[in-house]
Length: 204
Image 1 (cartoon, helix red, strand yellow):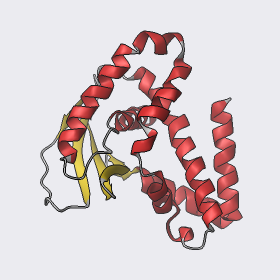
Image 2 (cartoon, helix red, strand yellow; image 1 turned 90 degrees about the vertical axis):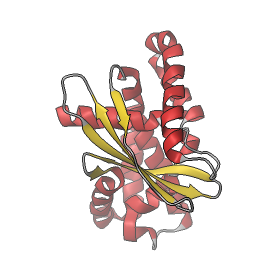
Image 3 (tube, rainbow, N blue to C red; image 1 turned 45 degrees about the horizontal axis):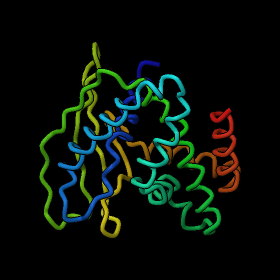
């Protein structure tokens, strides 16, 4: 349970860092630092409203965060080799449900985000890089630091997050094993139904 709590809070900080959809000429590491501070300040400003009505966290996530993830690429990576044989309609439906699953599962953790400190570690990458990894460490009171690597890719003129590695465990890789098992049991449509069912339970 403690491990799950750490992962939830780590992923919550991932959401805090997602104003990373920036012009390609800008530096992703600097944006992690600056935009993380900016979104934390916004959450602090809205703290009273969020405490009185926690459901307001979802519009916050929808407007400030979701456009900044490459959910289609994340879905493709999570589905792995099964993506190739999926229809375009199945790919679209999977992306929609996977996005909803991540948001509904972890957005509530933002409401509990207090006292965690994040250290952004030094990193070098070539100026023409199209994929970068930004290493950080999350420090929660009374707990050992948790290493987290944020993976970004250049999509057109924007940097978008496509994976996060928490204490050596990739979010996308973790879902890939779950998705593969479900597809083998009931196909891609079965996986989509399973995700939709989970999202419905979380929403209620």
